[in-house]
Image 1 (tube, helix red, strand yellow):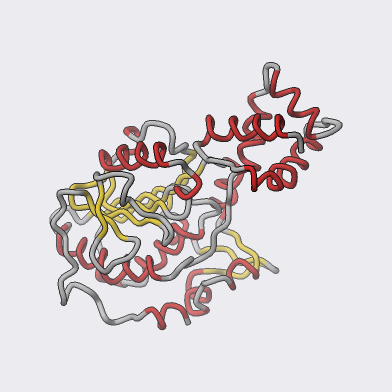
Image 2: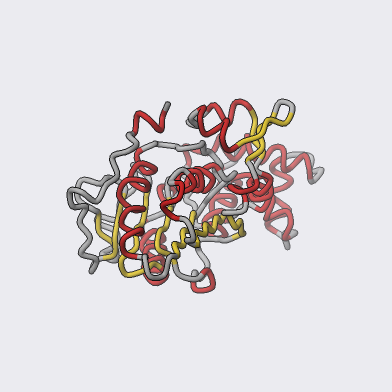
Length: 291
């Protein structure tokens, strides 16, 4: 791939999605955009690049952004955050939202839906503890195609084998030929919407819990800081932010701070939350959920 072509796709991706594409990822441009060029009947990737330098078709640009967006995910990916959600965050919410009886969760960059559906299943597994509560999960992504797939709630045998406990598979899914379909009670807990993290978050509403895992690693520090600042304005003062294991707020922003000994879990800078002994439920362990 010519360097000038790579630069055009790199700049387009940064401008439209915030993702930073480095030269060592040039192979991704060729492998992911080749099918897009074919779909649009360009003779080559270089020919598609030329079309972008003129007045590009909006739909072509959308196809390019969708093709370059990473959609890797799985059920209960990196199990620890789901343990923290179940054993630390939900007990806190049960105690501190007892008057409102409402919990609002946002999954940013939700991809094909495994993360929000995993959270819905964890919540459902609490049984009558949250009976009468309004627990809603908003799941967003920049890819309209992947959101359509997520809404369907249908997964292959390979996808349900990646991280999903067999007990949850049998309880919350129905087999449909070679596919597995999530039951309606789980699917109805999720509201899927298109959203670009570069945009204003004001219209999303406010949230008690935000999951934004394994996406900010693709942003530069200035963009990360801007996103954290926007998130701090829509999260409850005593809310929780989950980041990926390789992500951090340290050295980037002071709007959030890590929770001691709870890797990947963050609270707003003025939040005095501390996971005191006795706040965690011991009924289920990491080993139990991973079986």
